[in-house]
Length: 113
Image (cartoon, rainbow, N blue to C red; front, side):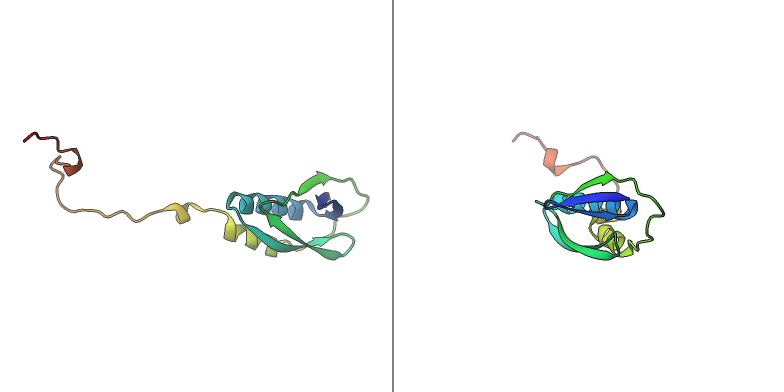
């Protein structure tokens, strides 16, 4: 379990949810964005918070007796996947030419008149 500290309040959630929340907060902050998210917390319930630019999230481990709850983190994971950069998002189309390369580059033509 992890204790999430946000806006002076503490909530408990699972390690996976806490990890995803911190990663999502960092990714959104890198993009200069923020988003509202809902996370499962213990005891059974949810918390709604705004994460991203200008929002601090602290996650620390907490020892606990008994089993950790089985929280569904798929919504948080999907949100993170939507904002996380992927190599495909950074690819650009490059025009190719079938003409042979004769070594001439007009940008470097320094002939004198």
